Image 1 (spheres, one colour):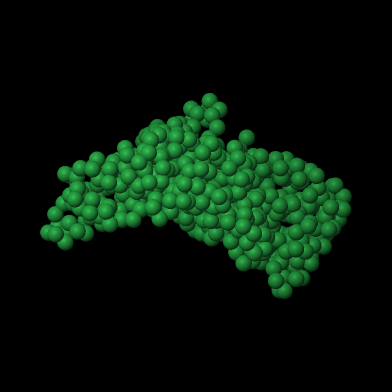
Image 2 (cartoon, rainbow, N blue to C red; image 1 turned 90 degrees about the vertical axis):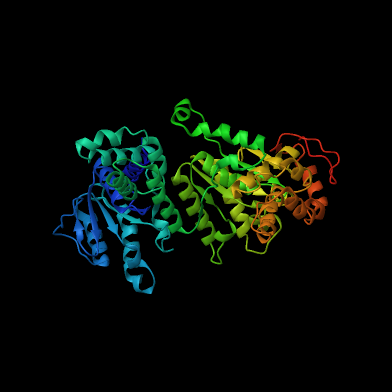
Length: 520
C-alpha cells in the first residue's frame, strides 16, 4: 500500500465516522483531490470542488448549476444541503484567505456555524468540508472543529508509477531504451522529496533532452526545491570522496561498509538503513570534512541543518520550522544531514538560556525525531566540546555509534600532507615523512594549511615549486592548537575513554607534549 492509498483509507474512515471538517496540509491540490474523490465514493458520498473563480465543479472541472461563488453564501448553501440534500463532500479550495483577518470575520463565523451544524445532520443528508492548503495554521476559532491531516509526498512506489507513465508516453523507438538503461532505482531515489508534478516534469525533461532517465537531472530539481524552502542549506560534496581525507581509517571503513544498506538487495533482505554517527574531537581534525566527503562517496545530497537559524522571535514558529525541516528530510529519501557543532546549537537547552524554553523544545523535538524517524536520511553530527552535550543525545537509538577524532597519527600526518599536495598539484619533490615528523602535534587543518602558506613564499621566489624546506619553515612558525589548548584536549581525551570509538588506527606516541594518543 502506498502512502497515498493509506491516506485515502484514512479520509474514507473519517467520512464514515461523520467528521464534518477535514483540513489537509499539502501543496499538491490535484493529487489530494483525486484521493478525496476516491475516498468519498468508497464512503458513499458524492464529491464536488469549489473555488471563488469557478464555483462548484465536478472532478473533471465541469461547472455545476448549483452553489455559489461567494464563500459565505456557499457555506450557507452547504448548511441547507445538510437538511435535505444528498450525502456530499465539498472540497473548498483557497478558503484560507477568506477566513483570515478582520475582513474574513463574517466568513469565519459562517464556517464555524457550518462546522457545528454538520455533525447533527441526518445520515442520509451528511455533508463534509475538506480544505487543502500548504499551511497547517488555522484560525483559533475554527481549529477545534477541524481534523488536520499531513498529506505525505509521493513514496517510492508512487514515484516509480510516475516514471513508468513518463516512459510509456514516449514513442516506441525510444521507450525500450529509456526503460532499460539501468538507472530506474537511482532516478526514483533522486526524485524522492518532489511533488507528483515536479517528478513528472523532471522525468519528462530528462527524456526529451537526453532520451533517457538521468538521475543527475532529477537531483538538480530536488536542490531547487530544498533551496526554495530556505530551512536547509544544500552543500556541494567534497570531490574525491573519502579518499580525499588522510587517515581516519576506522571511521572511513565503518562508513563505507554501511553504503550497501541503501541498495535494493539490502532493502529486500530487510537490512535497516543506518541512522547516523556523532563525531567528537579536537577542532580541525576533519570532522566536518567527513560529512562533505561522505556525500560524495555515497552519491547522495548533503544538507546542513543549522538549528540556530531555525529559531524565531515568534511563539511557536521555531517548532514549526523544525517540523517543516523534518518533513523535508523524510521526503527526500537518502541524504546526508550534517549538524555542525551540535553542542553550540543546543547550548541553551543545557545551560539555562533565557529564551523562553525554545532551546529545550528544540532539543526535545530533535531527540524525538532522531529516535522515531523512518527513512534513509543519515545524520552526521560533529562536536568539539563534549561537556556541553546533553546525555540523552548520546544514548543508543539516536546515533549508531560515537567516534572520537584525536590529533593525527604519524601515518595520518603523512597522508594529509600527500593529499593536500595532490589537491594543489604541488610539491613533487617534497619529503612527506620529514614534514609529517615536524608536525607531530598539529591538527589536520594545521597540516593542510602548510601547503597554501608555502605557495606564497614559492611564488614570490620566482613562482617555483614548493620544497620540503618551505613547508618546514611554515611549520616552525606555527603555534599548534595542541599547545594553546592542551588542557582542553587532555580533558576531551579523558571524557571519550570508554564512551567513543577511535576514528583512527591506534598509535603510541609517548613523546607527545600532551601525552600518548588514545587507544580507546
